Image 1 (cartoon, one colour):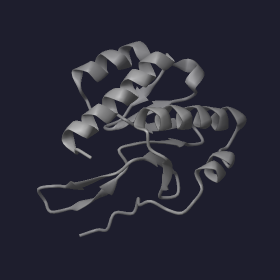
Image 2 (cartoon, rainbow, N blue to C red):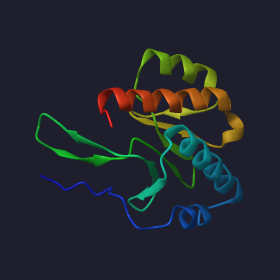
Image 3 (cartoon, rainbow, N blue to C red):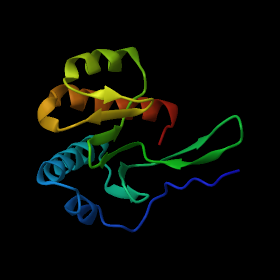
Length: 139
């Protein structure tokens, strides 16, 4: 079975953000860092080379594959911010409808810049994602 590649590292979060591709991406990363730290009450940790994560949980699939992952996370990528916060709940669908300009993947929320979104809706999405994680994987 393949080993999970995304694990906590010793890389400094501040150094990673400082290396983000442009000023807007760095400022947006700092804003998300403060928001997710406040909501999660967790210190940020680099997971792999490009994900800033908050907290952790252990998962195990029916297939036997298991590992650890961050409860919340984001990455300030070159093209857009990637937030690891989606859970597919009906409440989250309503929040996404109010969010503003974005796109989604299976578990990822993609935002070009925070100025394009409603920050109150984004905070609700992040809080809901953490509550969903806490329900599925109690601390």
